[in-house]
Length: 116
Image (cartoon, rainbow, N blue to C red; front, side, top):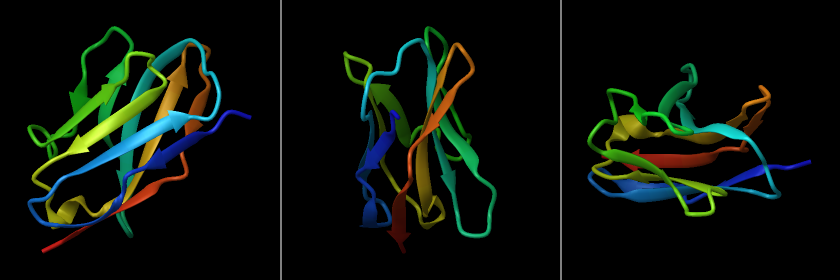
């Protein structure tokens, strides 16, 4: 069973930066897109950034200009560079990969806490 493993979360002061990583424990073929979601305590999970294969990168309005989604050359790791962090960015962050066959993979989540 292939799993996605996230890392890079932690505690940071407002204005600081973190870089999240998400790597697959095995090979996943026919990837349609890679995305990052987040879920704050008591709130619904929301899409933060998506990187569709051959498509346009999308960002939530709340993170535009501050967050950047990218992959490595092998396309087996997806990153989320988060700059100018705000307390409202505090949440558990999840990566999700989707395949053309309609299958979705999710990571276990990594906590990001931004102190004011």
